[in-house]
Length: 203
Image (cartoon, rainbow, N blue to C red; front, side):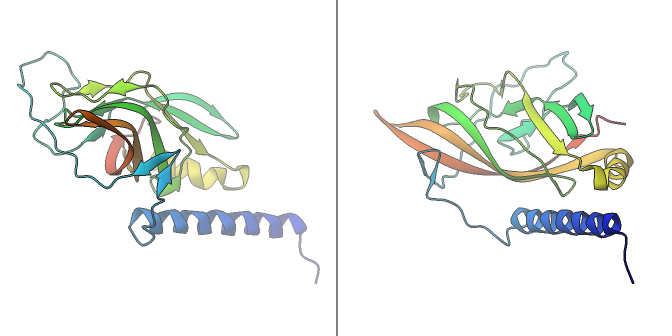
């Protein structure tokens, strides 16, 4: 019995997409925790980043972060930038907590990033900045997140994006730069596990 070739192709694409999501879940859950020795030429250094409490003053700003919550990297309110048949692009503000370490950051590299268990694409953030030592630092420009939407699974993805008021974001960020220790500087990449949430900008 002949089967519709388009139906078979659709089933194959959905299967491949499902396997990709499952693989990303495994990485996010720590089942595949293999880390490289180097990232973009920066030697990997698994260091415990020490947060520094700053003198918190009352502010009229609406987006005020709880500094008592021990998070090195925070994501702000996502904004929808564009939506095409190929994917959806968002801009997400990033706030880096004040830390005790000193150094100059060259780039942020993203690995195994997911939004609601869907793999997302983030280019390297190549906008150098100094580690904040007194107050949290809002990175400028914000991050751009691209969620791929293959036409074969567009309906399923649309339901997922619109049904949840809060999106779960997971992954790993390599903070690459030159870190100071005493009078020396070391070129290192420090991995930071990210597990946070953002409000759904589509709703």
